[in-house]
Length: 302
Image 1 (cartoon, rainbow, N blue to C red):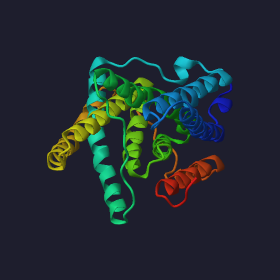
Image 2 (tube, rainbow, N blue to C red; image 1 turned 135 degrees about the vertical axis):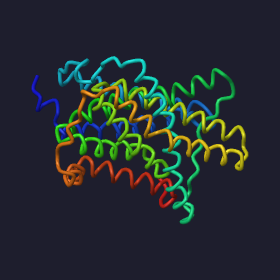
Image 3 (cartoon, one colour; image 1 turned 45 degrees about the horizontal axis):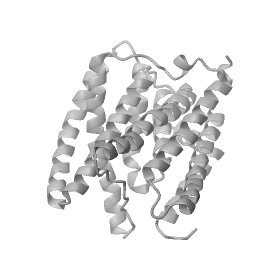
């Protein structure tokens, strides 16, 4: 296997751009087909499932096949101790509330400039609906996005040093959410996800974190909408944010002690981060992000 061929940063950046464009393309096709067959608003959950499979999972599979990689080694499919799994779930739970806190900062700034901040997600009406929502919004992205970002993309960047790889992949992970109100949370989570993968040398660590984080987020959103009382939900979220901020670092320290022999080689100068982000495919991703936000803010109509 040619290592340079497999771990080519420029090639991986183009690959990421293609997967993003595929997501927009499949979303457009789904909406067009839906408009011809049904009335009403298309299901965001169904659209997400279609995109996760066709624009993320299948391209990752195709990438792995084209590079002729050792799948188990390349994607770091290594088992984790049960204790570490529980700790990761705790970090994922706390991380969601910390992310909510970080996003509040952006939302407050946007509110000052009178920019739209609301985003409606599907609310399940019964148990089956809840399972479907968790599957579509929490489970599938938690697995497939990890295969793409911490599986393929992180592999390419880690040769530039752990610090650079963690930050750059977190930036890309944040941008690819294409939601200005939800940028700091994915950036924070992206750094945490990349860190635990490099610390454990197991992609299962970030998958556990990501899925737990997503499930917690879905449950928070559902509870807030069901309760429909800003005072109660505000107090509840504030308490959980404080608890999460207090518990996060001790929990992370306990997790790190479980892998004392696994040292992360920071490597690479910090100033290289900007250089790594200034290349054509990443610039095109950023331009796409700006266009999407401009459309969301009603600056132009398509």
